[in-house]
Amino acid sequence: MDLLLVGLIISYSMTLYLFIIAYIEAIKICSAEGKVYGGTMIGSFTLALVFTRFTYLFYS
Image (cartoon, rainbow, N blue to C red; front, top):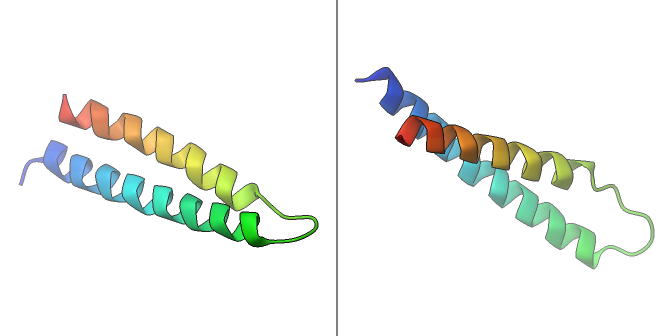
């Protein structure tokens, strides 16, 4: 198996996973009352964008 294909598969799966985690955390934040901790959502969304860029680079 080609190393670029492995990188593409891993980065794509990490992108999907991190976007799902960010979405779930956003739903939890929306339903919470009072102070909330948004670090998990912000971190997951930021890393999802980074892995999206990796996916684009491996696909090219």
